Length: 144
Image (spheres, rainbow, N blue to C red):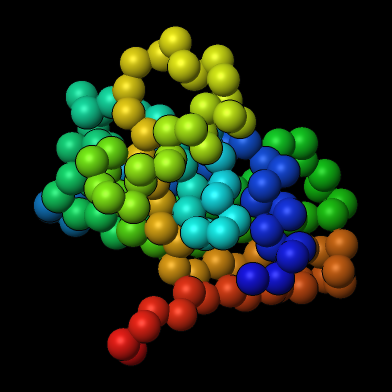
């Protein structure tokens, strides 16, 4: 992954995710996250009783965005990503809680479980590199 993409994601704290229910209706929500650069996963905290959790237990495919915590309208930057949401009991999320709470220690007192988003594709728009400049990243999946 290009270091500029990883640096941008690591520096931010909030993303938006869109999932699709069984009737094909989209549903979006915002979340605080931590970024695991080595695994290329985002971790966030949520509860089972939310609408998005109910949807994601049935359909794990999702897409989202990450914008700068402080917007600069002259230097547009942002991430669009696609991935798969992994519930709190998924084996690949075993280190998610410590990773997430290290970045967001106040969340320790909040109820909920840590979920993971395994990112498959990223498009990073960064106008500071030139107008409309985009950096792409895609996970290499073995066996494909």
